[in-house]
Image 1 (cartoon, one colour):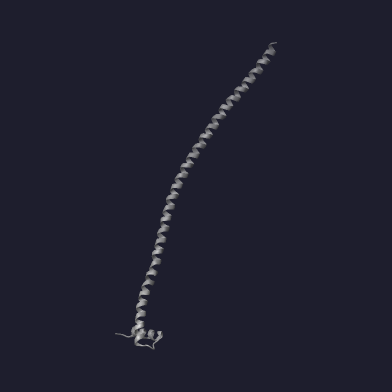
Image 2 (cartoon, rainbow, N blue to C red; image 1 turned 120 degrees about the vertical axis):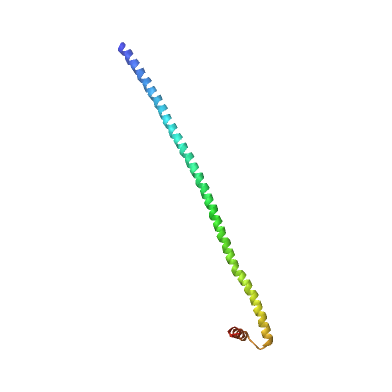
Amino acid sequence: MMSELFKKQTGKMLILILISVFIISLVVVDGIINKIEKTAQASIVANTIKHEKDMARLKAKHKKDLAKTKMKERSKRWFASIPIIGTAMLFGTGKDEYDEYDEWKKDNPGGTVEGYAKYKADLLIEEP
């Protein structure tokens, strides 16, 4: 009888030990999971901060590059305006030349454009 009672008590103790080990393992696993979660959250926060710094740096770089590009385009427009100014001056000079041609034409009614060109060349070649 004592041996039966001992067997029952031992079985109950074994069940209690197994339940206790299970509960303790759950607590340990929960602690490990909490540590992993905190580490992951810290990593996410660090990556977020790094990402924000990178974004700010890239925005500043982009703004600087955009300013450089705008400056280059402005200078291109400025240099492109020089031929336009030169062309306008050429038209002004051309108008003067055409007026001189008209005067020469009045003095030489039978003259041609080639004759006027020869006349101008002779004026350039003559030494004062």
